[in-house]
Image (cartoon, rainbow, N blue to C red; front, side):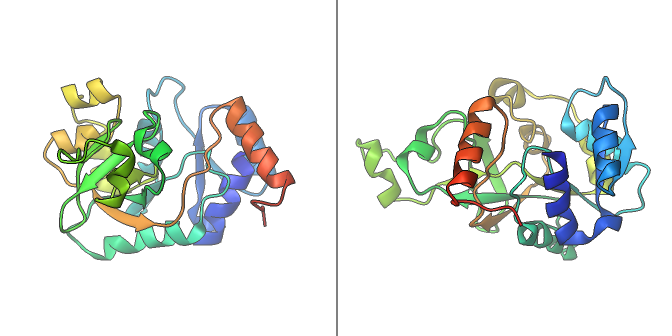
Length: 224
């Protein structure tokens, strides 16, 4: 799994720009056998953001992309697109979003929805349906009347801002929704969003793994 994620990231930026941050020696060994670079971090770090920030402190990189190890089919072009937005000096954090096209995704509480402003900065992330269409009682018709977006859980930061994020206090919004990115918004900072056609195929449970393997066996997805 880790090797596949690493390989996709290498396609975007080259092996010299991709590091795996981990506290586990077995992951370290697997990545190094594949030819990758590893930064070992402390075991007690409480989140992926903290782990990436700890690893990034030793790197000269201005921009850091936090790609989690459960995204074996991540599109390298999306990673390139994320990096490119930092050509704008006003952007210090960015994340991708995808258009919701079915009612199941619209209402699934395990998916995070996002709404954004006219300049493509996130207004809010939530497990609820947002926006709420007051004048349409039948929620099954909402997709016909408004654009809805789901969040793809990949984050890009300026390294300096990433270090600041780990020092921000946890607000009540983050604690209520259990969404770490709300800490940034609640503290008054902006998150830029980019729209993508990529829909996450993350592998977090045995059920996810079974679905992915079934799609691989039936040729619905492929690994280059």
